[in-house]
Image (cartoon, rainbow, N blue to C red; front, side, top):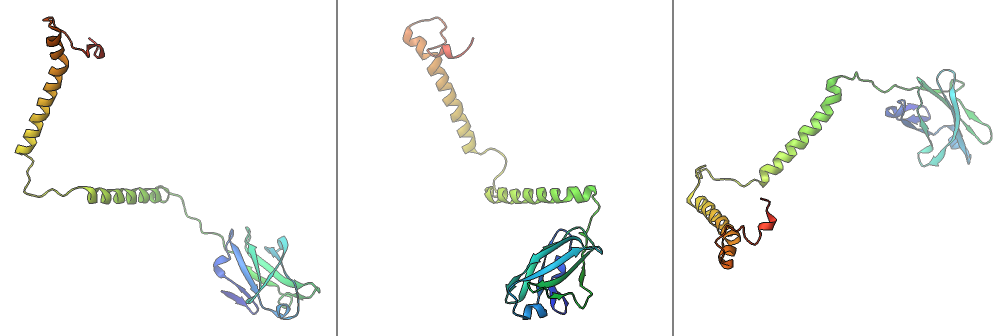
Length: 189
């Protein structure tokens, strides 16, 4: 917190585009005033001149001031009786910093995206690893007897369905002609 006698302001808020919280505990705050105003402007010529009504709190009178594009913030205080606190005719002046600019390069533009993609891919690979069953080392890549038997059973089932749909209808009809079966209309010739 920067302090100039009776004024407190957070130095981290003194950047263009931010909002600075200004707390005042000067002589005007100690008198029996119902309302207190901050009279402010930016730069050496007090551009964007404004007057903001301050709120009374336990810390003193508080105002929130949006920082505009300028190099300094100048202000003083007044009450409803037209009494002023202008820091003994010097006003209260604080430097306003510009946001730090970085040079845009392929690394500064691509790195954040790449880092997010790599993080997501790492997260997905961890999920896949946790979901993949662990295969014991004693199992080999050569098909076992159980796998071969299952393959043979599938082949037998296919052959059975083929016969069921193609040959049995011929036998039932008593036709020796080659008949495609009762489901022949489903297949194109």
